[in-house]
Length: 381
Image (cartoon, rainbow, N blue to C red):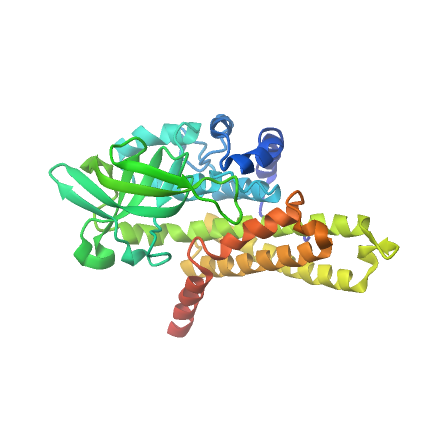
């Protein structure tokens, strides 16, 4: 890999701390968490004590006031170790930024301290059983009744769904207004009528709690409106570039790790009396993958630079998400093949990567949606 110039000394010191933390507090337990279907809640509080949750939060709110490169480091180090159950990325890169960017002072004071300490785990409830990526067609309603909103509907595939203490719920406050009738509401776990369904059994991400959520006449005060009524769809569009960049960051670090592990494996594994690495097919496959992974690393690092400078646009983020998720899937597939039958065994990291990586082409907006976004911009120019 070519040298990276994106990070400075203090970033690498932070990376070292993150690496040591994950090796001590997560790696030894992740296999059990896969069996449990969720990680240990105590890990969130340990991460909070280290300053690893939402590190970009301003100092006046109790955070560290760090730039997004620190988020990227957390995403990278988690992905490198295949710790796919840890929902810090969703919390720090996606949900907490909604609070920071559009929350009012009362909401910030009420929720941010817990978000930083790990006492409040967050989730965002967008997807519904019948909508998928079509956020304009959500059916969950939040109808004003006096000083409250009354929420009815259901959500599915919600990351951090079982552990979540606070959920940002995407609702229709004016069902007749289409996208302009969409709003965001904060719902706390334990609110009457709010129920968490079963922890969904998935192809991969087995240690990640992913749930159905149900809202049956859930009454929340008007103070729980996040931002302005009717602007929810705009808020979603504003935050999606960072979400898609985070996916690209995780994919790129993941493919680098899988490739490095495969390079080690083929040099040790013998077939026909010689290392697998001695076969031309193996060499050509690895060379091709390494070249493409290097190109992806350069692009994603450039996207991080643009984002830190406030210049990452929706189309570029969509390109990063599209290309990285497609390549991650191919790297995992090709590397599994080079492992032979052992690559199909769950105990091997490449098997987990193969299963875990497939979701990247779906969440954060399917890759078909990414293509539409890119094509629309392309055909306008």
